[in-house]
Amino acid sequence: MELSRDEARAAAERAARASYGKLVALLAAPAGDLAQAEDALAGAFEQALRRWPETGVPANPAGWLLTVARNRRRDEWRKPAAVPLGEDSASLDPLADHDPYAIGDKRLELLFVCAHPAIDQAARTPLMLQTVLGFEAAEIARAYAVPPATMAQRLVRAKKRIKQARIPFTVPDRRIMPERLPAVLEAVYGCAAIAWRGDPGEAQYLAVTLAALLGDEAEAWGLAALTTLMLARRRPSFVPLDEQDPAGWDAALVDEGEAYLRRCGSAGPPGRFQLEAAIQAVHCDRRRTGVTDWAALHTLYAALLTVAPSLGARVAAATVVGRIEGPSAGLAALPTGAETFQPYWAARADLLARAGRDATAAYQKAAELTDDPDVAAFLTARIKAAKRPRGPKLPK
Image (cartoon, rainbow, N blue to C red; front, side):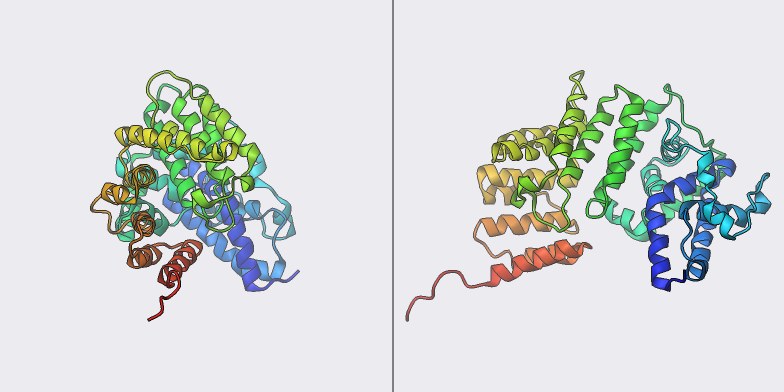
């Protein structure tokens, strides 16, 4: 069945979203060369865009792409997988020889490889986000609030380091995993944050799989709880959390996330992900109580700012202050030096509006800085609402 180029491109994009990280891991494992694996896979996608409009999408797109990528590198492999690209390759499943969902999950293997101490610490998590989880360098740069060129340079250097150091593509044993775990958890968290408006289900799957693999690691269960509670509140269009109707949340996922949070245990002080999961649990508890426990959120954010004082946490904590002590106090609590941080402007606009002050410029800045069309539309609507005259005009 012939397809249009747009239909073929859409099919290739679906295959990339579903299998990119697993395919890169499988291609990179024998030679330990991430850059060559990505190049081979890019070539396979290009060939798909040329062939699929004529031949139709194969029954197993991921297997087809892996076969083509391997064929492109046949001269570099000791046992090349040179399979003719006819109808047989459409039904062939090279992935059947691998079990990426077992304990040896290829994505988790590659995540731990990218957390190797020989790789620059600043590049480990971005490398995982790009190579294993399939995000573009520009998306990662926005998440880290750095210029795209800077992030691209970090990623190139990290890949060269992996090739030069011949870092083995194996899951570390349990004696080594703890020292690499923080970067891996950060990558899964980053996946959830970047994909929040798209499909955060992949991050939730990885977080739960990793927590189950480690067994009694509290922060891993905290991340499993956090990603699950985030997924429970996912909506097709943007609505601020405090304006969402809890009846529209996934009750089963809320219960699942709360169960993961209880698995964190009480040994030692809670870490970042446990605290963030507890914050999400407080919000989700509005489903039961009908109100938000702002005092509990204030306490949790105070603890979070002690453990992980990120810019996002400081902005969120300021909005909680605004709910408890009033919008003027919230404005005073906003961090300085955050003028390029979109959530800062969104929070400032909301606090200004709650204080009865002109929030137009802050809403405009927040809308300019977001790359999410739904968020931009929401903020633009708030600008229009702020410009409407309030109350009846008095007679002259």
